[in-house]
Length: 408
Image: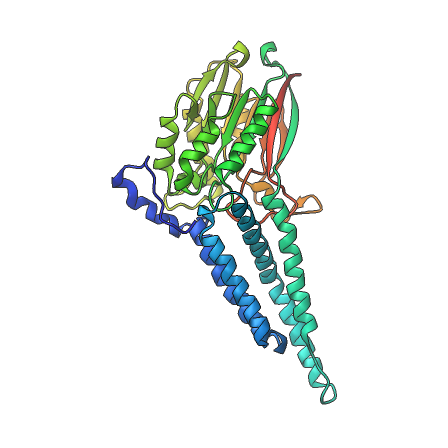
């Protein structure tokens, strides 16, 4: 979103802190202006690549389309209903095509250079490169952009998992926990999308709903977002913070979540004992190891040290032998959670890699990317997320995961 952030939940003295939002490389504002810059770069590349792109009709078509897309993008937070859906399709197709075009720039530039060198050795009057190369460049970008849009605007899928836990109390056999993470309510995901997801979870008869971080990017939509969570029939809703929640909007989000207690329970290096089906269950939530300047990728040794500190705080009230479920936005907390006796850890953060080809992430930035992992009697579920701050998903659809516990 490119409009100033306002929130009834944030004290006036802290409003200046929100100005940092525009500087965050993951903020909606930053993504918007990054798109503008990349659009200019692609337009200039097309202009320099041959005479076909210099024709007035081609120039008008490209720049008019770019202006329309970014105008719709600018006002996307105010659009509702079918207009919002159409606007998100348009912007998503554009971003997918734009990213593809940028990735294709180097190989196509080399191809054009090769054809130009070859043309210098050809007889006079022979065309060395015409509109075919440019048409292929634009065509491939659009095809990928359209394909990407189905993964970002369509869905979500519901992924059901069953895990066998040795020593699980009989009363917790069959307990169903929904994991909704990386919602990113903002320009591309609306509170209505979260409402639909909660309705899906309600229809699946879950016992617990866990929000595993990165709930919201646009504080203007915070109240309807919390209204959507309160539709859950599995109360209280258990929530933790992700890196997008923490920088720079942590104060507003935490205040809003706490105002909704006891219907929404926010866990920040703390735990709560709940009684689903009348059986005691400890649920702990750990914070995200974020650097003071907002960087979300700490060096591994600093990250591990921070996670160990969080674990000491979050598990302080745990009784020996008490069944424990852990919520951690960052999936790399799993080894610590399993060592402390957690039977299940729920995470998100990775977006499933965002781009997967032949079932594998193009960039595997984490040890645990997506799906179910097991370590002894402990399990980890990593959701690919309900939303996105960058509308680009290839082979990784939006999802809700539901984990059912069974006695092993």
